[in-house]
Length: 297
Image (tube, rainbow, N blue to C red; front, side, top):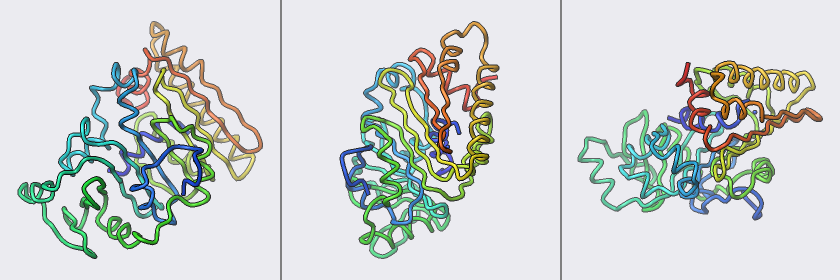
């Protein structure tokens, strides 16, 4: 599940405790659950996303795995009752947090459907020893490996929100972004396939980075990564150029909008910092996502 959620952030990257108004807004109920040693945050502002013309016209009928999995395990309607998702990880513990309208009868209803309830430090977990869901309150829930949920509960009350390193990275992200991610280093097994199969190796070359997408007028975003050496920065730059070239080669000549989107991508390298600028027009968004998720030949 956590790998599927991170896939969306990687798609945007294609390669790399909020203390001020700068950066994306995280709901306070979710922010205070972020463990101190978190190294990866991936945020999705569903309410803002669903209001964008791009989502309404091209993406509204799609099933996004991370959203559908959260809805399935919590029993809610994601189009009506889910406002915000926040994936948190320290490289070992992975939890998907959600803010929404969770009815008081959800726990009993899930039990009737055969889900086992078991307690931990005053909280009821629903699932098994492999994976579970826990309702923190009527508007906040968390799903993930049971070990990770126990770790999250252990940290509750002492967590102060994102670390200084993550907060600094979040300043690169505009508040209006609907998708965003910040990464402060560490190993991750992304479990990706298709055109994104080499991203795990690519992220391994990045010491820290950020990425965001804004879908109000198209698929607009910037990915940024800091590398430890000049050679690793050049390797990332070369890999990004190869990804873009591969995408262009897989695009039929008659799909001019999609070709223009690839041509409009821009990569810069300065002082071991890589930036990828993306500007995909509205009418090419659906095709672009299909291409990079391996749904097209």
